[in-house]
Length: 199
Image 1 (cartoon, rainbow, N blue to C red):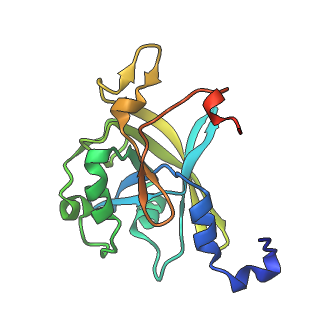
Image 2 (cartoon, helix red, strand yellow):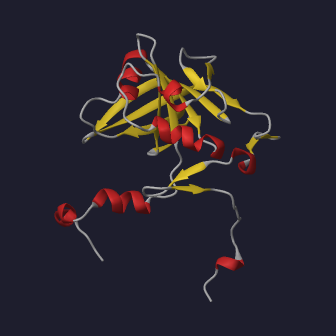
Image 3 (tube, rainbow, N blue to C red):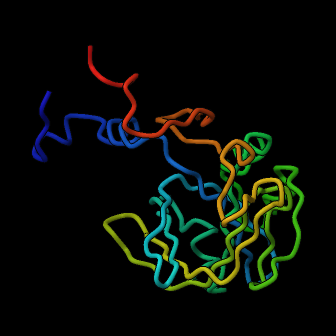
C-alpha cells in the first residue's frame, strides 16, 4: 500500500503513525500551577533533542482546551520528566485521564511525590530516573506544541545505576508505548546478530 498526502484524509493516519513509530518511550511529566496544584501526565512523543546543551523534548497534542501540563510549563518555566517503570504503569495510566486544572493528578493516581532539587516542581518518588528541566522554548507545530527543556538536574536510583555511567535496562524496567497499548522492554541484543539474518 502507498498513501500520498492527498489521500491522508481517507485513512486514519494517527493510527498508522502511532502503530509504526514504536515502541515509544514515555515522558511522565510533572508540573505545578502558580496556585500550587500538582500536575502529572504521560506523553509518548518524547525524545532527546540535543546533548549540548542537554535538551529533552516532548509533544503535547491538541485538545478542547490547553492541557494543564502545557499551561503550567508556559507559566512556571519548569518541569520534571519521570521515567515509567513497570511497577508504575497503572498509576501512569490513571494520570493520563482528563482531569480539571484544580485536580491533583498525583493524588488521583495514588502516586507518591517528593520535592525536586533544582526546580520548584514535585517529582514521582518511585520513578527510577528523574530529569529536572527548565523550559527552553515551546514550538507550535500545526495543532501540536513541542516542548523543549534544558536539563538542570538528573537523579537515578542506585540499583539502576551502573559503573562508568550506564543505566541498567534490566533494573530500569521501562514501559514502552505501542499503538494504543503498551509493551514490556525486557530483551536486548547486539549487532551483528546471526539469529536475525534471513534464511
